[in-house]
Length: 405
Image (tube, rainbow, N blue to C red):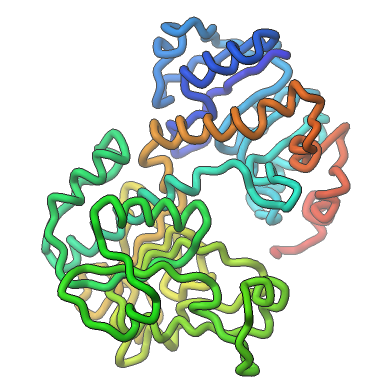
């Protein structure tokens, strides 16, 4: 099997890569039958020389490879027919702007595997940059707070080298006795928690967070039943009821917005789930939240103040609840919003190394053990010019019969 690590060609440039040099060394050691080539790139966080120095072939032409690994969407003109591709295609939610990409994949009889579709038998995602989104998002939340209140001015993440650098910079700051609410217990939420714990912000229970006054900065990490309640007043025993019947719930996040200063939004928001931080909550006279770091970044979604995604270059904007519109973040009545939708790009080295480790653990063995756990079979979106059964729901999207939905 010939493996090609392709150059990222999407704009703005993405410096991440699926495999760092040392991970490719490991791959070849564990699977000597695999041939690996790296397409030359002048933007990748690891230089061509870094791969050459550990014995990996770097070339301008990887077209003879069987399977290609990339991070972001590939321009249609660069797709090679009858090959296997792994990348984030951003098509499985019928994203309108990528319909042409999926159509080209089918026309060229490409086998497409999306990193998002790599799941275990219980449908849990195995691969992703979520942890690093959480790490960078939490840092950016503190950076926003420091700027808003003119307390400190942290450097941009993209000017730093690693997670450890972020922690060192944060530890130098003196935080007032603020309250931080963190939603989510997945990879994103736990990544944000890593930062909070590393800088020794005290974790407290949701009940204590809501009811007690502290002389130091504290945070609480909340799950779906902490910020949602059943409409009929019944109390659910566990999260399963919420996941199965989201329509029976309404947000109870208002009790947190009345006491929290910063909201780090690291949750996964499923289809049909109620909005979390509503316009009504933000307009309430006792709403205390002044900084929202929406790491999950669903535009016009469950967080009312996330009216658009922001960029690494300009990560912050202001939101004025009373007028439900964006304003400069310097506006005295505004909530400061961070809604960068590609946060891991700010920490490309750490993110790439972590991604490659996951890929080696969960995906690469499937190529050599006849896919005994069904990893590849579940992840495969297209085959022989057709959608696989698992992704047949995308047919109307491919055909263009879905309007703007």
